[in-house]
Image (cartoon, rainbow, N blue to C red; front, side, top):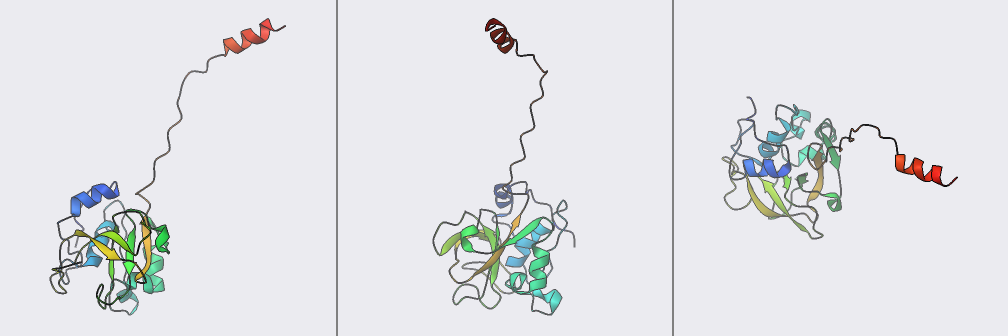
Length: 189
């Protein structure tokens, strides 16, 4: 199955393109949270794939993107870098959550930080199949809601295409002789 193309030059462009829309990347269970993140991984110019623990004998849960060492290593390679610690969260980062009572069920959750870490136990999160209307068999399209970080945050992945400013090219001009400085030096003799 080929990934649909969505604009993704910046996080804001990606968010604006996907919010309110649903993506089923693997053909199972509709619009799941994992599918929403895999959408970015599978963009044609990135050419990666989001791994869960199912590849390594797990259940395919979202939390296994982090809890399985092999999956974490693959997900944090190429165009993505793994990081830990909520204080390091930047807007656009992919956040992985563990099982937490009343929030993430047995599978955990995964989505995109919609803001930098704000110093609280909650963060604005762009993700699929989250909040009221979430469904284990049909899923739910992308939306933005507050998510609980607290003890549920496991770690994250940062896409290297977002948040980097290209270097400013050097200016090219003809070399000009500093006549003013030369004249001052000449006059001081």
